[in-house]
Structure formats: C-alpha cells, structure tokens
Amino acid sequence: MQMPVYHIPALLEECMEGLDIKPDGVYVDVTFGGGGHSREILNRIGSKGHLYSFDQDEDAQSNAINDERFTFVYSNFRYLKNFMLYHQVEAVDGVLADLGVSFHHFDDSQRGFSFRFDAPLDMRMNKRSSMTAADVLAVYSEEQLSQIFYLYGELRNARRIASAIVAKRSVAPIMTTGNLLEIVTPFINRKQEKKELAQLFQALRIEVNHEMDSLKTMLKQAVELLKPGGRLVVITYHSLEDRIVKNFIKTGNVEGNVEKDFFGRVETPLRLVNNKVIVPSDEEIMRNPRSRSAKLRIAEKGGE
Ligand SMILES: C[S@@+](CC[C@H](N)C(=O)[O-])C[C@H]1O[C@@H](n2cnc3c(N)ncnc32)[C@H](O)[C@@H]1O
Image (cartoon, rainbow, N blue to C red; front, side, top):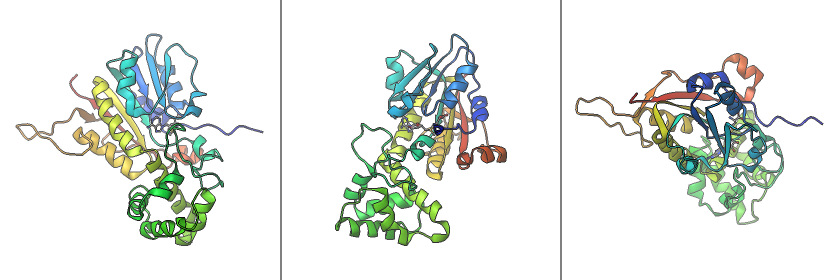
C-alpha cells in the first residue's frame, strides 16, 4: 500500500523569493510539517547558513532533516524567541510561517480533524496539551460555541448549531466526529454540505489549538527577532488569520492600531514587500487543490 504524502508545500517558489535567501543567513520555519519549505531553504543556504524549524506536533518530528545546518524544535511557535535564545541566536534573516494544519492531520483517521472519518473528537496538534474538541463541546457555553462557529468558521447558522449542541450534550456526551455530525447535519445547507462541515471543523480546531493567540504572540516575537532588512513570510488559509497578518504588517501591532510620528507618517517596523496578496496559480491549484485558499504576505523589517 502506498503511504499518503505528509504534505505538499503551497506557494513554494513564491515563499523562497519572499525570504530573499542569503547563503550565510539564519532562517526560521515556524511550521515544519512535512518539511517541504524547510528542505527548499536548506537547498538555498550555504554551509555557513542555518535553519531552525518548529513544529508542535510530534508526528512532524519524524520528517526532521539530517543535516548539520538544520535544527528541529519540537515546540509551539509561541515560544519562538525563548527557543532561539536557548540556541544562542539573537537575530535572524527570515521567518516563514505556513499556518494551520498539514494534509497529515486531515488524512489521519484517528485524530478527529476531518469529518470524513468517524474518530474521537480530539483535534489537538500538540498531543501533550490538555483540551480536546470533545472538551470544548462539553464545557463551553452556548454563547461561546456560537462565537467560535461564527468567528472562526464564518457559519451563518452558528447560533442554531450551538443551541443544538448544548441541548444534545445534556442527553449524552459528544465524543466522536460521528456524534457531532448527527447533531449538526440538520442545520447544514445540503447544497454546500462539505464546505460548511469543513468550516465547522476548522472553527473547532482553531479553538482547540488556540491558533489566533499563538499567531499573534509569534508575530510580535518574529519582528523582534528579525535583523534590519530581514523578511517575514506568512501563508494564511482563512480570512481572520489573514486579517491579523495584514494588520500586523501594516501597523506593527496585533491590535491594528496605527501609530503616527510628529509628521503624521505611520510608524511601523515592517514594510510590505508585496502590495497585492499572492495566491496560488491555476496550475498550482490543479496540481495541489488543497492550496486553493492559501494567501501569502511578505514584509521586510525596516532600519537597514
Ligand atoms: C500547513 S502545515 C506546514 C507544512 C510545511 N510548510 C510543509 O512544507 O510541509 C502546518 C504545520 O505547522 C504546525 N503548527 C501549526 N501551528 C503551530 C504552532 N502554533 N506551533 C508549532 N507548530 C505549529 C502543524 O503541526 C503543521 O505540521
């Protein structure tokens, strides 16, 4: 039997151009996954360059690259700065983030990321963390669930779905993807069933893994870590994530507050490199349909 691919990297060439790789540079890939982007960075740096790659999923560790210019960091990227200091690195030339989950997560029938398989409602990228999707469904209030489905899943039916979950969980705990599907299917638009279920599962996954918080924390630290002229390259896969990155690049803070100097000029540590967001070509989408929603933003740290 053929092993499923761990992941196919999105916008590979565009990311490399965005990083503007220097042979002696020090780079960080904060989302290692199958290592597609990391391998390409290693192909482009020389013997004095170095790459540190983070992943919080222990499965990704099995893809670690045997190369003396490579260091795998098994951690959430919210601890980016601490781990770099631990490795005695105070400044880097580029940080790459390819957010979200890998194909491996969706294709693993046991981890609950996909509605294609009946599995325990887990959805933790980091198997050491305590809260699973089943826990979220068991303890969050109706209002909290509704907010998650609306904000992270953009589901118009968020309130009705949350209300059905709260009604049913008092009868029996919601432990599996099958239990959840049974409850929510009546509220899903048949004509776009797959899309809406994917949005619902995405919303839960984002909450379970505190993805928005980690992203904001990482962005702040990435800017502090970048050398003047260093590059921040980020691929997002849904609108809320993209908005956070876009505002951060524009204003230099995750709140999106525009700060101006005495002359009314916007003060921000970053300069946008691509004015227009970069998306996969039709050819890439044909080859790799899961890259469809990828959006790439590139910024450069000022002061050089
Ligand atoms: C879209 S995949 C990256 C794929 C990778 N670029 C490649 O070419 O194979 C995202 C990866 O980042 C990891 N990840 C997501 N959020 C993370 C976080 N906060 N800290 C560390 N790793 C994270 C996931 O476990 C997953 O392996």
